[in-house]
Image (cartoon, rainbow, N blue to C red; front, top):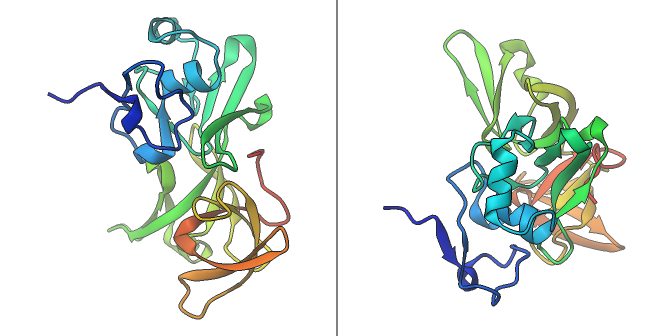
Length: 234
């Protein structure tokens, strides 16, 4: 039988929790986000936002349909919430986005209601379907079907600004010179850098952040905008 908890000392360093307060902490349900890039909802609300005191209160919010994640009613207090996801409390008009802070910890920032249905997703795959339509595989386990004629408008490792639900592309965020990217790992973790150019192999980019120029694999960042981030992420 799968365990619903893990020892606090064994949790990823990205979890913003006190590791010696108790022995165990809730474990995330299986989901679209890797464990080191997400938190169980109960941990996000109790340990990061500090708006509940225990799991019982989170379950009460869920049973009364008062908490939403990415526009959908939550069913489990162990639901994993990851990078750029939005946790909403419509009845009190409060909305929060999941981010990585500059210490590499998963954190939350309050956002405006107008951004609560907008997300930045990375294109991680493209698949040609039998009816000559194209499926874009996106981060967070989402995908979208496009007419074949549009598939050339999107490439691997670029991003899209979408609204959800229903899933709809608002803006294409290509990986190109001057694009803004959010660092997911390395020395510049949690910071926004600017693309200076691409390496010939297409797998690395030359970036600049705070006056420092460095190379980074395209898998170590996500495009978040052209002149500035398309949504509030810091």
